[in-house]
Length: 143
Image (tube, rainbow, N blue to C red; front, side, top):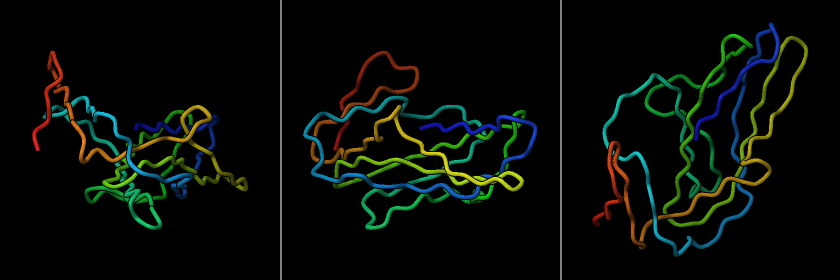
């Protein structure tokens, strides 16, 4: 998912930490697995994070040698984070919290799917279909 963070005024806001909270974990869904945008494509410089939801204490970790928190944002200088959550064995409902500070103020922003937790389910052991970049149809995944 893409997470855009921007200040609401002229002051710089320091983004200190991003945490994942697992709300529920169960057996993976028995539905088909669909993935869009599979394949090669142009890359834009981004900051990417990963979450292993199978870990007993999942954490948000920086991907590919990029720098970790803290970051800073303002009204004129937003930051875009890409967060990829994965599980190989469960159906997981989860959300995020972002700790920030600005001057003498501190706070936490709760991040979810419009009041509902995000949901990620394992795809192994069920039919999978990919829709390649520039494609015109779903293609059954092999193996």
